[in-house]
Image (tube, rainbow, N blue to C red; front, side, top):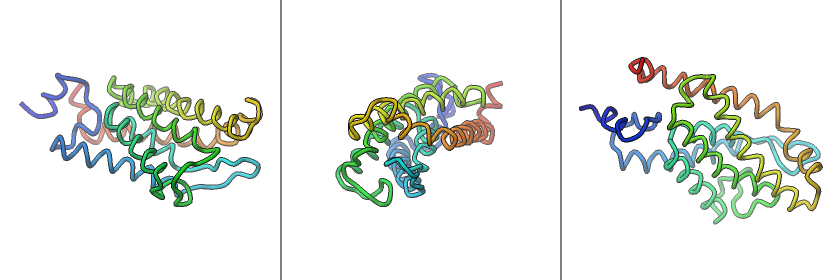
Amino acid sequence: MEPTAALSRRRPLVLADLVPGERVRDVALVLGAACLVGLLAQFSVQVAGTPVPITGQTLGVLVAGCALGFRRALAASVVYAGLGFLGLPWFIHHSGGWQGASTGYVFGFVLASAVCGRLAERGADRSILGSLPTMLAGELCIYVPGVTWLALDAHVGLAKALSLGFTPFVVGDALKMGLAAGLLPAAWWMTGERRRER
């Protein structure tokens, strides 16, 4: 029996399950996903009038969350957040430690990874129509703690926090959602797994 076939009887497959060598693979994927988010954090643009920059992190969180599945995605985001808060310089601008106004978004990455991973285990990332709601759920998981934290950190009301930490990023995050929603079904198609299931 093929390893992927045996695994699919225990739980639905995610993309990471197609890589051989279970334990070494899982450790490598968790660390690799954390490093990917750290790398994408360096692609940042400061937006005038808000302490929160536009970064590539959310794209990495959404894609890795779906590709790794619940447990590995959660582990990767905890590693990213934990080591970053401890001082590893892979947050924006090669920074580490507590992130002030942006801290809530980092906590949101953990929640989004878990949610996207769980939905992917249910096959939500295998088509664009399934991927888009999954990405939207992930984005909401990032924004809710992000905006809430911003409101508390900046001592402003919710309306002001939304104007600082949500409204300026809607268009950019919509583009990242669309990219992620296209990448994942395309990756499934390239592996051949989706075609074999039909």
